[in-house]
Length: 476
Ligand SMILES: [Zn+2]
Image (tube, rainbow, N blue to C red):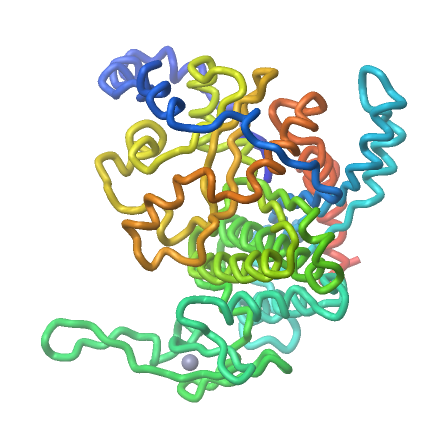
């Protein structure tokens, strides 16, 4: 993901801060809430410390990170746009990493890092944006959806026999309630917004209903026709990123949603592949994604499928006598990273601070102040912890919940706070503490590598993509 502030114009930020009305207004706003030393201590006293955990360093670390870019490609028609999503995966074999560290004393050998970068794979998706119709598509939006499915099914995403599309199907099959029956994906709502089945109807008593449709899209072709409106329905419509898609405007936010859900699905895609390949090796793997283990926006319902599928995989690992894979999210930016910086000095070295819902509502997410409900009920499949290493570095780390679902919200809220249940905790901490000295601003090297490789800088890299866009449209 791009760092905050990237690409922002240098506005009159300083002028604003000197403006007396703004100063007065800021004075009327509450200060950032911060916990007291006692409040932190109260939580820490009940928690194990980093040194209480033993764990081997996983042999394989897979880091996944993405970026998006939207380009105005035609100087004569600047409103015509093309979107890009690029996701990079870095595979780190930790025994090799160890060897190259032995050879160098202070810093990591840049040549060796370059060699490690060769172990990077990337998936790039070029998608139509405003006013661009893919040949043969019914509409701008239909073209977007067609291309999206083509990417998910493309050989570029193939691990073994399966594409990312197959993993998406498996996630849908684990959704609650399952969206798959007899190898068909079920849609109860037509993905076409204009479809009459999709219009809310007054039933005369003020309540709104929809005409129900029952669309069954086969796994094989991935395409079906809505019986009501006759438009195409694609299996990848379950991602729902097209719902916010604008046929005549910027789609930066849809692209961002697509990037995030694809990162999480790719993480699972690797896990599923390794499971087939070698369960012991899967138990010796750590997958790191950027940001918390959560799916936001329209694709959010998929998080239940990811959570349940991961739990099934873990159950299989345990019954076969293997470790569960470490599935970890690391946050570089966002509210939790900001909060981590705020309380860094309040946390003693060597501690693990699990973020309870009460704490989060009180100090991190004040937009939800006073709430009691389970945090992330519709989005999260992992628990956030703040880990402060013995060397004093602080990491916001998210670990996959050790539970299959959140059906019982109240008991889930309690159980997710039980550190002992997180079987991958010891190895996750080992990953953090092993690589921390090579970190750059609290980011892990694989994440940094992935970021470097994934980031599309606005210039000159973006320029190259502009050229690609033109080529894609047959303009040069
Ligand atoms: Zn329809």
